[in-house]
Amino acid sequence: MTSLYLHIPFCSSKCHYCSFASIAGYDHLHARYCRALMREIEMTPAALRRTLSTLFIGGGTPTVLDDLLLHQILTACADVFGFADDAEITLESNPESLVERDLDELRRYGVNRLSIGVQSFNTEELALLGRVHDAHQAERAVQVARRSGIDTISLDMMYGLPGQTTASWRDSLSRAIECSPEHLSIYQLSIDDKTPFFRLHRRGELHLPDEDQILAMDDITMELCTLAGFEQYEVSNFRQPGCGCRHNLVYWRNEEYLGCGAAAVSYLNGERCGRIADPRSYCELIEAGTSPVFSRERLDRQASFRETVIMGLRLNEGISDDRLDQRFGCRLQDIYGAELDTLSADGLLYRDGVRWRLTTRGRKLANVVMRELV
Image (cartoon, rainbow, N blue to C red; front, side, top):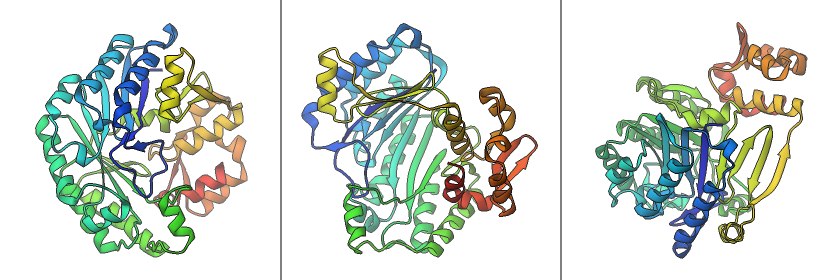
């Protein structure tokens, strides 16, 4: 375990599609929560105090925190774990929390990768999503980040939005690429339970692009990203050469990681541990010297095998039969048999030497493939 995730649950506002563990309007809780988070970091058992190769501070919007609090958190990580010389330290952010701050300070604190939640460069689409920034602020945020000297800038973009057309998606993605980020995370909008969008969708009041439009948007994504020199290395992620997200690769390869903070999850020794999601309850538990972990799940060998396959196939590198054999003592054919033959015959999956990969068509229909293999 050399990867750590820290969860910051605070946002300046709650977006209409968001089902993440985040809250808005709790500025008074920031300092208390960060003290609790640092205390949990300090409680890490000695056996897990390994030099970090990746740190990902996510949320929420971590950049709503004061610079001093972010510095204290990074210092606590350095004191407890230490950082490898080439450690990747990622901070999630939103444009409105970047445009007026001194990112040079964050860079001096060690942040070398910034993930900016832009979602769209169309101001009308941003308003429908409930975002509090506009297209101009998004462009300015990238400019501020670039001037700070932070090594890698990643932009989060979304398609399949209410009222979105193929033309507006082409324009939005083109503007993102013109900002010259090193990385793009491009996700189709999902309608999750207990969100304003879910309630609108259930009432038939959310007008989403149809399947043909979504497929056309996928084609536009591949066209523009390829022309700009981006490599698709995961179903929803594109990188310039050498600029993939090393932290997220830990997840996609189903490797071990530690999580701290409200709603954070750890995966250690084959067990997944989830922490309580409410930040106030999280603070109370930590302050009382009690573990914030409230759920534990230990998968059996076959379930862990299936999970590893499903996550690994999201990567363009695919999944290695040899690596599966070393880790689990079996190969894909041993578990799936005829299902592999069917997916291969349908042109969704293929074998390249000892690796199984999604075809170009399979990546477009990745959710269909995953449902067959779950």
